[in-house]
Length: 216
Picture 1 (tube, rainbow, N blue to C red):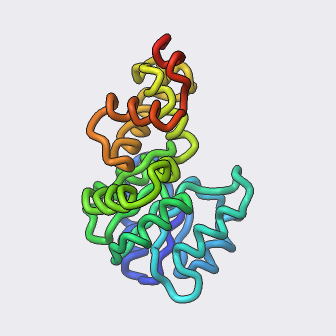
Picture 2 (picture 1 turned 120 degrees about the vertical axis):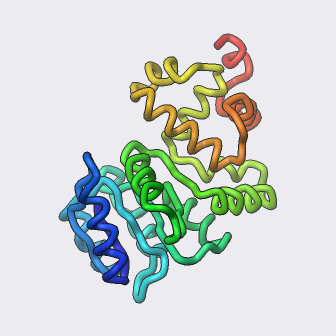
């Protein structure tokens, strides 16, 4: 993974902590969005921990540039920031950020987000999730789907078919723990309390035909 933050103490602290975690390899760190965009094609990190507010190119600008890159070369992005602003949160998620964490987030939660991002999942703090839900409620009723990654939409479609985690694991060829991570992310992003609500939402959004869901 790559750490991008203009504060040296934050970068070094995060690198020290993450380097201690089994299965997590920090391939580099940098202090600007410009530098991040230069080294990502070279280092090819699976996950980028990205500061939102930096001189020059900020986190949103970096996300926009990454979206222009080939899909195979685009890392998963976790936003770590001192600013909790609803417009910024929604814009970052729509640009592809998987998790949006305040810098006050506990270290173990950051580690959890890194591991989740590596398999396409999200970790959202309650305050961030609440902002997303409120913004979605004020907007277009079809807009919530924009908050989900393509893989999360596939999992949501399987939930709408009434499939269990084991069945989803087989259908989408992913591990059961990865399925659980995606389901948790879907519930958090959509402000839903359980998989039944998620299944109903998936049907309402037309992800699968009703007769197909009934057959499942």
